Image 1 (cartoon, rainbow, N blue to C red):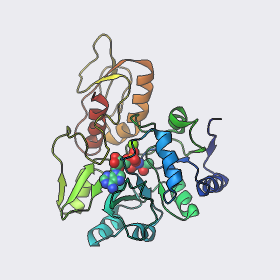
Image 2 (cartoon, rainbow, N blue to C red; image 1 turned 90 degrees about the horizontal axis):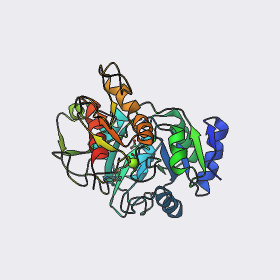
Image 3 (cartoon, protein in one colour; image 1 turned 135 degrees about the vertical axis):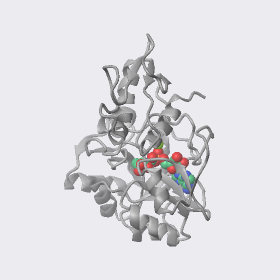
Image 4 (cartoon, rainbow, N blue to C red; image 1 turned 30 degrees about the horizontal axis):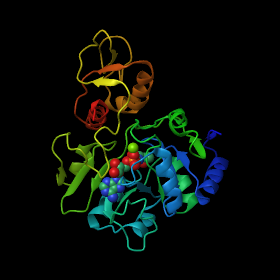
Length: 313
Ligand code: TXA
Ligand code: MG
């Protein structure tokens, strides 16, 4: 039986908490994308989650917390980590830190690493679910491994409906791209994935002390982050000024009529539309040509996802 999709009422939070306590899998809305949540401390539940996504085991998961106090039980926060989380949490920033020796996140969820990815989401539904549950929830994006991330409950249902227990409907995700991931394991903070917190705000908060791997073509920038991770079935052509005969054109700003990420050239709107438009076009067409997107603000995260979508192994 496919997972029920239920509105995010207090009753739904109770029902979801109950499922999580029994090791079940619940799709929850966050401000970035929908996450597939389970009890981070329950290795059996985590194994079911990997299986449902079809995710390679070596790809570690983000633990979602409802407070900085909860984060401090799971990882070691130095002064820089404390400052960053105070400033950007709750929100779309994921930090990589040394796992706490008495932390509860299972080894399987960390893929055996000594480090832990942590985020306190801002979405009210995710927040109340984590605090009602009372411990960290791991939650990768709620798509089958290799598909684009879900930004609406129906995306989750299409990818995972028959493999999970419940989908909480929180409508469309506000940001539409995943969190920004920064590793705090070295003296210099390192950007592992551009995302919904723009790199400029992050770098300026760090006083410019942010290193980034150059180029987009390294195979893996977070463990298991495959180059083709965001690949739809359709062939994608980037930086296109118009469509060839057999292509559909996805515009940005003023341009030919048809699907458009943002008629006004607003990068935040484009990020919020990105995955649902890609999904829709991918269902109907074999070839998608996409307008150039400026590499500023959220444009960096959008271009990162588009490069991955266009890449073929
Ligand atoms: O916005 C988001 O981050 C969403 C929502 C649901 O929170 N989650 C998400 O999770 O995008 P996921 O699993 O699809 O992507 C998490 C990325 C993976 O590429 C993984 O390799 C990386 O985080 N990651 C997790 N733990 C890590 C660690 N200890 N060191 C380096 N990278 C890590
Ligand atoms: Mg993902």
